[in-house]
Image (tube, helix red, strand yellow):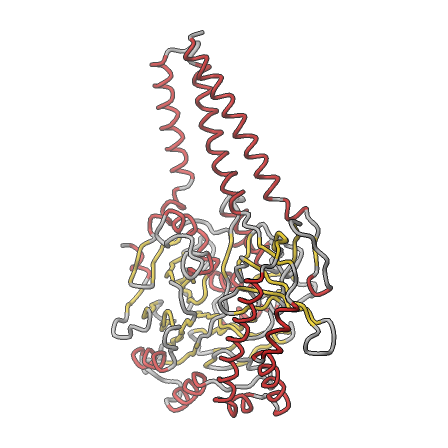
Amino acid sequence: MHKARKAVIITSAVLLAASVIVFATASVLSGRGNAGHHVVMQEGIELTEGERIEFSPAESDLLTAAGFGHYFKINTGEERSDYILIPVVGYKPHQVSSSDSSEQDNFNVTAVVIPTTDQMRHDLADNLRSSAESLYASILEDYDEYVAYGYTEEQMQKIISGLEYRMSDEGQQDILNNTTAYSLQVADTSVYFSAKIISAAAGIVFLIVLIYAVLGIRIKGKHLVIGTVAVIITVVAATAFIFRKDISTMMSLREFCPGLYMARIDNDYKLDNMLEYEINSEATMLNAISQELFFGVPLSVDLEGFGCSAFSAETPEGTHIMGRNFDLGDTDGTIIYTAPENGYRSIGICDMSVLNLAGEYRMADVVSPMGRVMSRAFPLITFDGMNEAGLGISILSLDYHPSHPQTDKHDVYILVAIRAILDTCATVDEAMAFLEANDIHSMAVYNYHLFITDRSGNSAVAEWVDNEMYIIDTEYVTNFYLADPDDPRDCDRYDTLEETITSCGDVMTIEEAMELLDDVQQEGFTQWSCVYDLDNFTVYVVSETDYDNVHVVTPESFDN
């Protein structure tokens, strides 16, 4: 055997073995959090420096200090000074991974115990005082509004007294004294995932080199080249044929206007399979998407609450429309067109921050290679839309703990429910029947209600109060409970919708509907405004409150 060939074989074999070792090590390390012991923060804990632990944060317990980060506050007695503070470093709120435990309502976080420095104590105290000063000034300025919202005088005085204590020298010293000697540094396991991907790719390369070096002993180089080209052509052609619809979806993704993108969804997004899963949390939702669409590759999402407005009306011509503002903040949307083989065609808009393609935790641009790959799952994150049968639906958030019914019905995640309704329901009654037949689970730490309307003129809201579903007939909705009389209805946007729709007798033109959306938009938060023409399968859309530029979207718009 030629010395050079022998050297290549030996080197490739060694590097292949090294890749296998790196892959195995990264796999073990990425799973250490799940193998470690689980702690419940509110029960009091004793930890040692360097220890790796796992906890499931309830967002109501994991507090934030502006400029510092997050911390746990655990009360240990009746006095104001009877508490401990445990700083949490590196935690990103609402970041959920498909690898998180699906058995718990709150996803798992892996952390390493580190020493709490004096600087960390002072930073926490300073930021808590700054937050208290800001809130204190706001309460004094808007005291009457807080009382009108439902706070009693006793509650207000208790809040004010607590803030004054927080700002005092005594309160500051208590923070310094009561901050624990240890902190929790959230472990970034993404480095292990990257190591697994890189080592696997390197291992494949070294394996191919090794195979070629061995085959070269018996086969001439010319024949090896011809055979390789033939194999590559065959594999590429077969792959292109098998994934032709997925490729079509990815290639269709394009920028539509500032803040909005557009995609024609040709691939099978496996709705039937998704409905078979018992999805009751973000982790189980991501796991289902990962398994069905991304070959088990881990996914993560960023979920936040959003304030929106929606209404229905009839035009002077007798057609029916749904108006919708999506108010979130830093995000982009993608308008999608779906035409499932056994369902209704639909046009809807997806929030790109959910898949980390926009917003604070953006990992890639929407039209990047990663964004194009993720576009195959866009139908499962649709936040408002309409189908060809003339049914429209919008999701709106509620500032209340999430709804997780526990009956013997099938568990369905609320975003999957939206997609199922768009694909299979033609009327409000059919949509409500689907929701009532399942336990609908809300997202992250918020609750939601659904505004649904159809071209018969029927409109209603479905919402869940203490895990019980209610249906309320209404033509407009914002972000408070309609079924709960104790939920204060102090919302200027709702008042504007009510006044305008009542005064016009539920009849308005497309232009007037868009003007109403302009009237209830929230500056700096409204990302898109849509008027869905339910009778003509047409959407009029405005991006980023640019109401001078109304874009018209029909199924033909996706052919460009």
